[in-house]
Amino acid sequence: MTGPHARGLGGRLLGGSALTLASSLLSRGIALVQSVVVARALDPRQIGVFAIVTYVLGLVAAFADLGLPTAAAKLLSEAQGGRGPLRQVVTTLAVAMLGVAGLAGLVLLAAAAPLAAFYAEPSLAGLFRLGAPLLVLSLLGALAAGMLQGLGRITRLAVAGVVKGLVALAGIVLLVRPLGLAGVLVASIVAELVMWLFVAGPLGRAAGPRTDRAARAPAGAVLRRGVHVAVPVFLTGLLVWGSALFVRSYVAAGLGWADVGYFQLADALARVLLILPAAVAVPLVPLVSESTAAGGAGAAELARLSLRATLLAVLPAALFLYVAARPLVVLAYGAAYAGAGPIAALLVLAAFFQALGVIASSTLVGAGRAWAWLWIQSAGYALLGLLTVGLVPVLGLAGLGMAHIAAAALALVLGLWYLARRLDVRLDAVGALAPVGVLGWLAAWGLELAGSAGIVAGLALAGGVAALEWRGLSREEASWVRAAARRVGLR
Image (cartoon, rainbow, N blue to C red; front, top):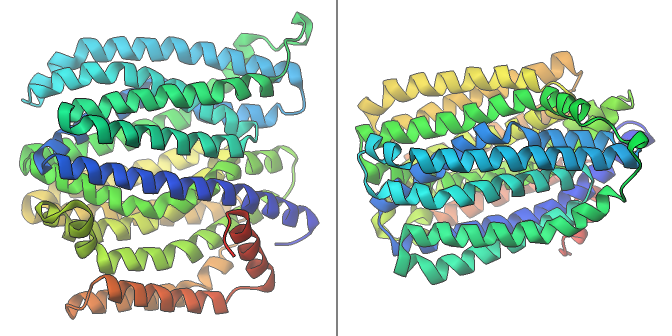
């Protein structure tokens, strides 16, 4: 980093990231246990059906949230200096979200039967109806999380995520066998209620006391500013959830529900790699926004640091998961899901590219360049759709994995190009790790071709790459790593 201001921003970034990383590790671990419990209680076909429920809910939520959680994070981070406008942002966005969430729930209730008929799966109707209250609560919870992020209440947000996961896990353990898929939804509803109650009090206190009318910003002005910030994020959400639902629907029609189940569990395993970038993104968006609003040059250095830290951490983990994917799937989910092993390895490589893409997207959102990321994402998802239609009928799930790799790689390349050209982000620190990365992936593919892939081989490869990375750290980076480790309780 260059200069004391940049170093201060870097320290705040890594401090906030350490907290959210600890929370993310716990939350992802809990989510994996949830998926294991559900998979062992049900069969691949039921997992495939539930995947459709999940992504229909996600797509409706993407329509309904209007990008308001991201807008809340950005607007509140900008309004930290004035208590009156701060409260007005909170109340205006909360009322808006309550209205659209209620409307979305009613729409899903009305569409439950037609959707079940479209998928030719009668059980979906009841699941969609049960998902309607879950949709409303999850939208409100997402807004609360965005507000806490903008207010800098990272610790509270991290703890709330862990509490939500634990409550959901307990409910799933108790309800999945007697109620099946409905039990998973009921457990999720209870978890959302607990999470919302957990954050509501601190959020109200953080917004400050009521101010007189003269000090308040007009609600219309807040909404206009929120819409301006949220529209590209809203459209990006539609792309993400819409493409995910399209892929799963296409696989269900062409290959069957069981293959959707295999893909769903493989995707869940691969997304472990997104823990670190998701943790970094929580403090990164408001810090980049703050730096950009202040007219400083810290945003470029924050992006550079975040990209390098993400690559350092994700590369060994990606190599391990790639080499060990097949035995890990059987170990976690059981022999009935062995068919998910091959595509899991391919999705790990796609997630490796996506992890760096998360940092690029968070930087662009924080810098007010969300429209740029929307166009980049559009290119990636267009390629995903074309390759899915072209490869799945020929190669099955392997073709789907290849499509995800190509789409993620394209989005990452375009994102890095934009950061370098438009925001003056230097990629030299990332490029310095390229030889280690190339060597690691060549070794992983060599192990696979030789038939030597497995958990032990994956651990050995990941350990060797991590050792090479550690030798290349600067003193400042090594001190940050030690400080972050102490922050999360490691020594």
